[in-house]
Length: 551
Image 1 (cartoon, rainbow, N blue to C red):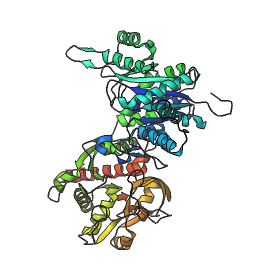
Image 2 (image 1 turned 90 degrees about the vertical axis):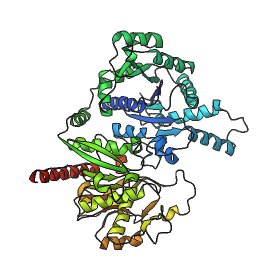
Image 3 (image 1 turned 135 degrees about the vertical axis):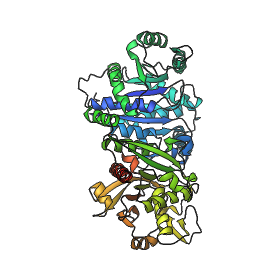
Image 4 (image 1 turned 90 degrees about the horizontal axis):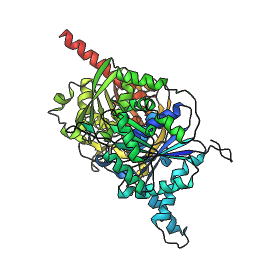
């Protein structure tokens, strides 16, 4: 796998989906990449999304789930989180492209006069731009294989330019240099008592109408696929029987790579790409992680107080971080999803008193803010382990200012520009920003951790780097008063003096962070803040249990 210029010549795998959405293309792509990586190959994954937004940064979490942020400040699809959590490598702006970005690039080029007066059309100009982005990562010379996930379903109008670009790209590449994996559904009809292949046949036929013949079919199913059914699928979908891969429902997404290994998905892909690889799998750490995940010795219940809890994908990275940290601690973390709008002074005790820890989640806007502040007050006063992320950290500052410093009107400038005590204020460089998309403080920034603090004990070092996505910050004009009242600023950005971490030494575990630690947690490298938080929840649960026994 070498090129004349000395760089690696990458091969390309495309993952498409049919029948229905939410089948798990991102998980299949990540699982295949994990298996290939475990055999010594250098692999990256990219996601092509068919919507017209330039990035997910301005999308409502109810519609799209969380907005995942990379080190270089790209606001991306949440599937990039899966890529990083499985591969334990960083992604970038190049790993997520939307239709909006494609059209923006083409229209910008047209405005510059790059097309020399030619009529700009979907074919060839849009498809050429898609192909250019497909090959960007492959041309770096860093990767043996580039996996490209095509968002949406085959048959969607929005996906047609991407499928046409894939068709052209395959035609232009050398033989055995590309591979198409089509993820589909084999539903089980209880009334008939059998699995049905017709939806898959129609899905593949629709893909063929786009000029693409899939090489491998990954079939999601609630039941095993008997060999007779695999032969039928192979016959009517023009693939070999060995290319019909069973993808049974799993208890955890982290079991999927091991299931795909059993189904020999990676072996089939390597064979069809004409890549010889006889290396053994190096999956020891992954298998140990899955074993700990499947065999917890403890259980804790942690409340997640947020504004978008009806759609759990809005906090996907937080939920996965709890899984990673739970496995390290041999502990099953049960998340109690609590809508912040439902929390009041009157019912906070009833809702929160039986929890082992509380995380106040990030978010934007005024809705549900008072509920978050009330959650912070309750856990602070009752010694329940607390972690506040981004807006959650800001709510902790407001709560402390109101109830400890006795500033009842303390607030965030975001929610109340008229507050006499804006303990949370808009960042200086944000004051002149008028456009919403891609203009927040985004990406990785350094933080210096103060020695002797809980944060230093958690990280074990003074210099760290974490990812951000915010416009507002702790107002340093009020920092001295907050510190004199007992709140500690244990992490500071060395360049801007921005407060990154706060904590309360008089509390068993009270930590707020302006950044998003959940974006750095992976299956094999859980984030230390979550590991320590789960451990604190376990300690608190044991103390409550002992207290109940003594009573």
